[in-house]
Amino acid sequence: MQLHELRSVHRPKRSRRVGRGGKRGTYSGKGMKGQRSRAGRKFRDIEREMILRIPKRRGAYFKTISSQPALINLTDLDRAFGAGEKVTPRALETKHLVTRRGGRIPRIKLLGSGKLSKKLTVIGIECSRGAQEAVKRAYGKVLSETKEAK
Image 1: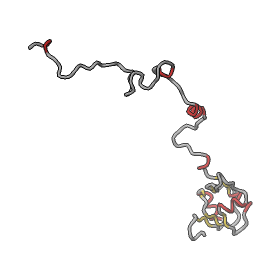
Image 2 (image 1 turned 90 degrees about the vertical axis):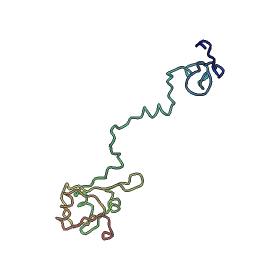
Image 3 (image 1 turned 180 degrees about the vertical axis):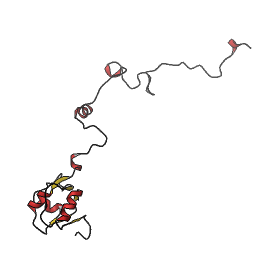
Image 4 (image 1 turned 90 degrees about the horizontal axis):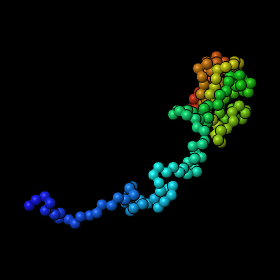
């Protein structure tokens, strides 16, 4: 037996070059002619185009405006509050020192610029180190929102 005398057990199957890209026959689901059937077609849908046109703030860790605290100085407290009063986020809102953001009272931070001449109790408000010292110098208290504060 020689090499040209060998026969396959199975019937020969004709290989057919198809439109490449799946099990969809000759056109692979791309249809017949036109720009959409060609290789490398570039169509963007309108929503994607609009998203790409919106200006974006770059960087992985940028803070949104809503996450930044509302800043209040000691001079504002000295003007708005009387001696012995409690300074809370709700009280600051009623005195119009803080406005709501998205229906909520934002985080508030007390900064130490200015002088405080009255004894005040600050409850549930973040304070800078200078602001804390100024409140304590005026014989006031700085409390985080706990059971003692309520």
